[in-house]
Image 1 (cartoon, one colour):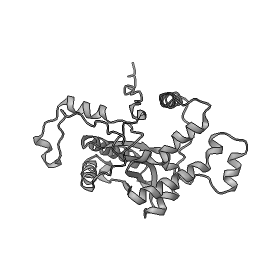
Image 2: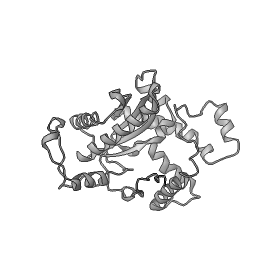
Image 3: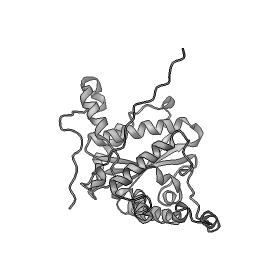
Length: 264
């Protein structure tokens, strides 16, 4: 049995009732501890997240600010058999793209001709801007090095990336949808909400990981949920309890927030 990693520091005390926010004091140290303790977990125990705990996390997430209070986002949450079906569907879609990811000759043409192009609302695999690409490369190299996966080992890399489509075994698979009529502000609001949700989850001892790759395909989600026509899938995420697997020891660099230089 894999062991569960520690969650938020025991010394940190966090408010549980938003109506009591004015009477509860949070120290700067306790908030900093909470923010620093949340990281992307890439292997989860199968233990379910209790419904009442999930409800409490969602209740905290609604406290996030929003553009004119419009809340132009919605979530889809899958557990148990539904989550397992989604894992299988996303892995199947991922495997169809492997020849393209390996840059095999004619692979893209075959994908088009067979009707297997990703059907996501956004181009998840679009090229990174040149000034941001080095950071993406650095975190990928850091993770592969941590896992002991060589650059030329396509099989091991495929297996590691496939785990994203399985939500790393998390008991809760989440999907974030945004209203197409209020872009880009809907995406902004969804990001604020999701970080609020992640911090609440960590305060309750629940770990998380964003799963941007799930937005590459829309079909599996539509097969399991009724989504309003105006909503677009922007990311997925995982919730659950971290295992003791070595992959969860990896930490990405957290660079300082970049500040614009004032004009002279």
